[in-house]
Image (cartoon, rainbow, N blue to C red; front, side, top):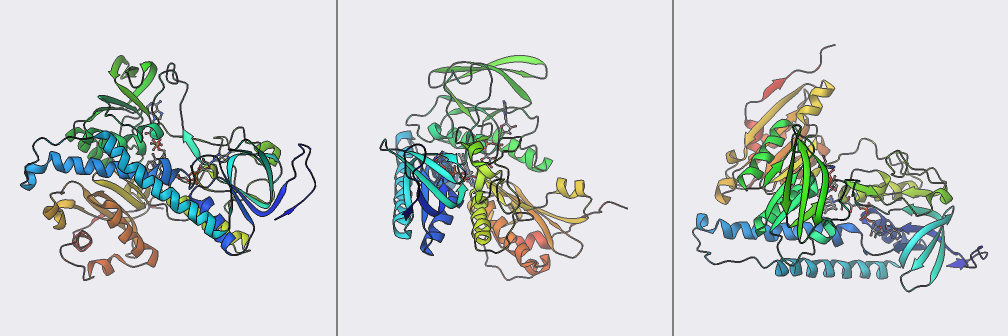
Length: 477
Ligand SMILES: Cc1cc2nc3c(=O)[nH]c(=O)nc-3n(C[C@H](O)[C@H](O)[C@H](O)COP(=O)(O)OP(=O)(O)OC[C@H]3O[C@@H](n4cnc5c(N)ncnc54)[C@H](O)[C@@H]3O)c2cc1C
Ligand SMILES: NC(=O)c1ccc[n+]([C@@H]2O[C@H](COP(=O)([O-])OP(=O)(O)OC[C@H]3O[C@@H](n4cnc5c(N)ncnc54)[C@H](O)[C@@H]3O)[C@@H](O)[C@H]2O)c1
């Protein structure tokens, strides 16, 4: 590391080849990878070493969801011939299991920063000039770091909108919900998207009464209607109350004690009261108050960093990565953003356009999708054959007593698979297997004719692609 001229704050900027703001999924892999190649790299992190995913998002939520799955097995024990009389959920124990996992993950991250040679700078960073970041260090000192290249990976936080009384009610976000040590008696959730639905089912299975209030009239309104209906039916069967098409007008009380939501539904005003409130209404990018204007970095109308398809911002030598760049908000996409920037920094040409965006919602059963849905194919006028089977046709589901749901695949005129949706046990794994076939450009017949182990869930793909398809014509000219 070398130093250059003293800045007007009296702090001497430290010069790096690469400075990365944030240590989330893409940012950390970029830092580790380049540092191992001998590049001088600094990573700035204010709180969560390794970013949201291992600390407060994907992995801890899936950890608690798995405890909820175990609880559901206890609740269903008699079905499996087991007497589980008198079992109890200990929420502190559930949360402690999660904490142990998170601690171990953070330890691994710290070691990776040490062994890769990245200078891990712990503090709050903000731009004071182009490619120049000042850091209010957690130890109370200040540093300035300048990068020949700078990557912004500051992520997002839970949106708390202007609904009267919402902020005063001190609602839980996912961060606090993952730290509960006692079970909410009645959890109200605003937002029936990924976070709302994953938490709703987990908390219900752990023993809370749960009500979800969603503004759209259909759950998961961007999915095909059969998916949306199947998810609503699952929630109904698990005794989770769904209030759909509801517009929340005000909130009163305090989450953790007693909290009420007043909402309009079909022109009628109603109030619901619970013990806790979780807000899961989407994300707000972490772009304010970090001097982006001083760096020459422009924002989109929605407040995300404006980037091109190579993830370059409007400022020279300045890139953005992951959620804050407006990329689809998934860890695997932030990771792919890392590959895009890594390659472009190496002088190659790698763009974000046209990439696959698979996803899995970790309800039980899971909802997993990649490629085209029926709704999208119809909107684009693309002809397809639809292969669809109930999960019960996959014999493995019967051995597991997990027969709920269906899988469906769209196949194009050239026999290539255009997309698959699985709402079923281990749907994410099944979808990923088909995704690999899609990446390889395999015709669906290759899966139909494959010898797959019996009885695995993947064997169901033979059943799927051997079923009689429904033919849907494309748009006529
Ligand atoms: C509850 C929940 C569950 C999720 N589950 C899944 C899932 O199962 N699968 C999936 O693919 N995606 C999931 N996601 C989405 C996924 O977590 C995000 O898409 C992903 O973490 C984005 O990574 P990122 O690097 O863009 O941001 P982040 O991981 O949020 O990283 C940003 C980092 O920057 C730091 N930072 C911010 N501002 C500053 C600053 N000024 N100075 C210093 N440091 C700063 C933050 O502390 C943070 O560590 C989930 C999200 C949530 C909230
Ligand atoms: N398994 C996964 O991959 C996973 C899990 C959790 C989160 N995530 C990511 O994190 C992102 C954020 O999750 P999220 O659940 O906060 O957002 P989301 O966009 O998935 O869902 C938000 C929901 O809240 C509803 N909503 C918004 N304002 C409302 C209001 N005032 N009243 C009632 N309903 C309202 C929206 O209609 C929407 O259905 C997701 O979009 C996803 O990209 C992924």
